[in-house]
Length: 187
Image (tube, rainbow, N blue to C red; front, side, top):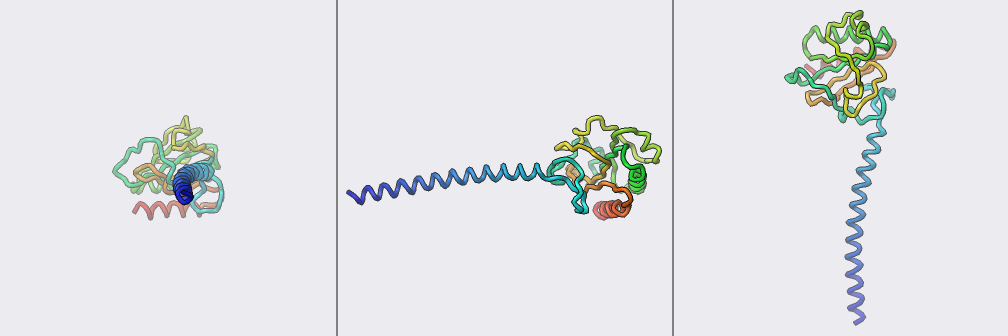
């Protein structure tokens, strides 16, 4: 009789152990998802040369950012998205517009351009490409980005960001590196 109780007690402990292992596993999965969400939200988008300079507000990694606007030329594999804040450094704007004009004249990749501020700044810098005014910057990307300065990004045909570039005052070499990367990717 004593052996029966011991055997029953052991069976109950084994069943309880299995139930608890299943519950712990479920909690672990849920905790892992929460941790991943928290970790991703706290990530910050940095420029692509990896120098650690923060560009924009808390968002996910590059590829999790999706361009919200319709892309006109779906036959192309890539598209350049230029978002100009016309209150930025005039030299930076001039240099970026010059680089984009070169790419635009090659007709190798479509360019969609948006601006925040005064369109005349783009016209005075002789932009050859058409730009649309951004009235609500939160609708350009998903998750939304607070656009603090001018940036140019390369987007694939599924609208995911692949490369991103923020011009720097006095560092035209950084822009040259970015555009040479873009040319290598699209060719």
